[in-house]
Amino acid sequence: QVQLREAGGGLVQAGGSLRLSCAAARSIDSFNTMAWYRQAPGKQRELVAQINNVGTTHYEDSVKGRFTISRDKAKNTMYLQMNSLKAEDTAVYYCAVDIYGVGFDAWGRGTQVTVSS
Image (cartoon, rainbow, N blue to C red; front, side, top):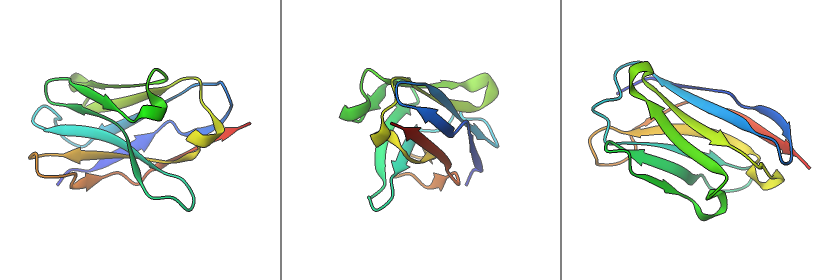
C-alpha cells in the first residue's frame, strides 16, 4: 500500500487553469501506472488520464489537448495540468496507483475542482 495526497483543487472560471498534484509517501519509481480519476455528482468515477512506468500517457477523449499528466520521480509526485477548463470538468479528482500492474489499489482522498460558467 502507499499513501497518496492530492492538492491543487479549487474554484476557477471557465477557460481557466489549475494544476493538481499527487504526492506519494514513497518512491514512485516502481509503480506500474499512476492515474487521475474524477467523479462528478450523480456520475460514476471515470478515468481522466494515466501514465505508466515508461512515461506512456493516455487521456479520456474529452480532456485530450487540454489536460497534461506528468510526474516528477525526484519529488515522488504526479501532476495534472488542466487548461481551458469547462463547467463539465467539475468533479472530485482522485489520484490512483497501480503498483504491480494488477489494478489500481491505492487511492487518494480526492480534491474538489469546481469550474464556474
